[in-house]
Length: 163
Image (cartoon, rainbow, N blue to C red; front, side):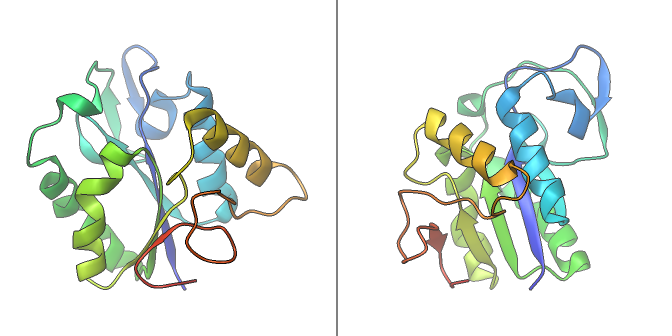
């Protein structure tokens, strides 16, 4: 199975032009999400309120935009770029570490195209998300996030398919 991890951007950003993977580093939760994606050794990208799907290596200017300010076509804009990368990497599973406003516009379309979508944040409050990531990133610990909002016996939330 080939996994691709999507992480959401954050309000905290460095000033100026930076690679996506570095732009959001002032954010503790973004750092934990990035660590999880890199620790898994998979391809990953960023869901940006302004840029849609942002490749981690792409340089962009700092900006101020909240996901609640997205346009009605934000999800289509994300998918236009994202689907090409998923196909290129031969992805089977898309793991999303982002809030509901980022996840909801993408799930149905990804599932319709045959991807298993795993939403590790479903059912977790922000503080619980941080704790789950902290535990998953701890040396010698499991790398899968365990949540309380799951629909299967492992506690992992799924949309379509199974692990």
